[in-house]
Image 1 (cartoon, each protein chain N blue to C red):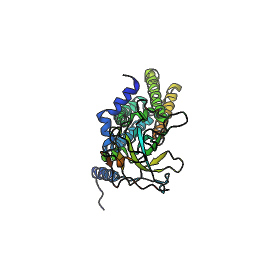
Image 2: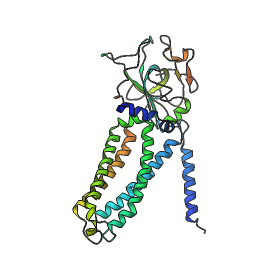
Image 3: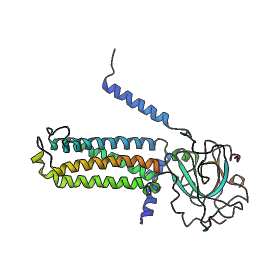
Image 4: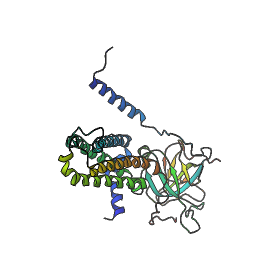
Length: 179
Length: 165
């Protein structure tokens, strides 16, 4: 299946139709997406600020991570599900929207940043877990994480104000305009 | 003075939020038609090229038909001109019968619209008036609209609006 056909089948799927035709589905799912997204950003921000040494280094990094990141993952799964439903409802428009594409790129960047942090920097956390200066790599990871997640939020809002009249979409060549 | 316990306060908050949510579901409500020239009404018949089922405003993109109703208006290169008309949210419009499935590409339809103040090729269906969908591949006679074609479907009430402006 080629990419346009895949997008078409997503938009034609029963969950997508439900999202388009139910009066309550979109506002409720969107509210859940926002609530879960706020939880993702809030919990990650606490970890990121600890990596930057705010407010201090008394709380062990390992403890902050284990307390917060469990909640982050649950909220992320909820947010992803709600976001996928919103995407499916109008997949053609979202996939062509620049703000949406940049948001996906920022999400990917946040994921790579997190993977690098946990794969390398976090391995020797014992030496800087508590009452010790945070290594530069970890501080960079924290700052990058905040930057990328703030970008995700800004771009997400941008989508809503840029997916208006799009005359750039090519006309389907199979339409017969002669009668 | 007694204070609500926190579970009760939480329940009250959820109830209030739910009530606000239900009350917020609009019936063809709209924030503003300010960007459209509502004093001008045009009646157009066109061929659907695409439906954008946006949650806030469903949009139908279409090629306006020539007066002879045998073809569509084209630019100097021979490509169809594309106009667009915006209406209520996709869920609201689905209740009235306008969906990506009921208006597939190639559908002939007539609508009264109010153009944007800045562009003639974009309009809003506005709060009143109906849309007429012609039977498949059966356009109206020259100069006429789908409301004159036997077997056409009226969506909404009150027929096509009278052209003004």
